[in-house]
Image (cartoon, rainbow, N blue to C red):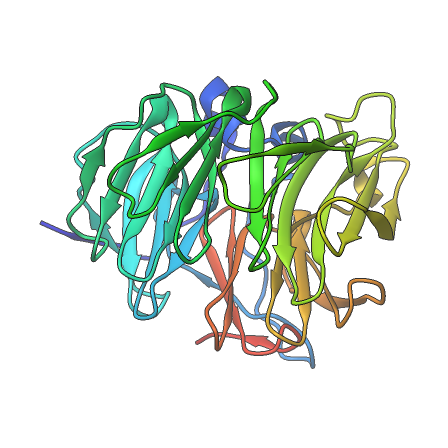
Length: 351
């Protein structure tokens, strides 16, 4: 039996953020704990103002970085008190139905291969589904927390703690690969001929095939959060500097770019001396002609080239936890259940 979500009052996330498992699922625990805000922002009507729709009953929240578009529906993960364990599907991003995963593990990643949804999470768990409704558990050969995944067109690559990398041509049978690092891996992107993965410590790994990996020079001192390919270069966001790279203080949020994953340069800096002024762009998406960055406290920026950025007004203080491009629309999820839509990254409205 499916359960339909209804609109309810918003709540606070403190019962989730402090838990160890969720902290590993979301490397920004320190930032989110300090910056997550309650309340619902008013809908805006001015040019370039985002509009929002709250869908989740309190105290239920979207899982960070876990959303996929299959071409006909969205698949995402939400949690209520104990962690991000519930799978939801939606045809339009506004009305969601809860599905039965058959497991109790936390999920931290979903990717769509064109024929199969692959969800990965705690204790080495991987589930697959052709429709987002019926899910099957797969044998992985690992018990590590699996945090990120990417589809290359012929291979699913899943990353995780302690340098874990698993690959599968079909999502059904999995092979453990050697990464050459024991650092926790957190995000990855595919260019069409090169895979680039980032660790929580900022280390870069590259691979032409997902099997053989090479360690490269670190891009960030800590907290890399998102990486994407924008047609001619990789773009990544994370932190550098500061006495403690795991705490947002005098640290600097950096956008870094690379044509090949090996040689990197910094294209943009956001620096602040205190949390009240701190800007952290934590998620990136490329639409084909516009790079979009979203982050804490509702911040949004767009750029045609990753070097020249324009701030946009989201009309809310909620932290963004996911951002994807469906091919026609950008869809971004907020930490308290807000969903925002845009066709160009500039003007945002309800679908």
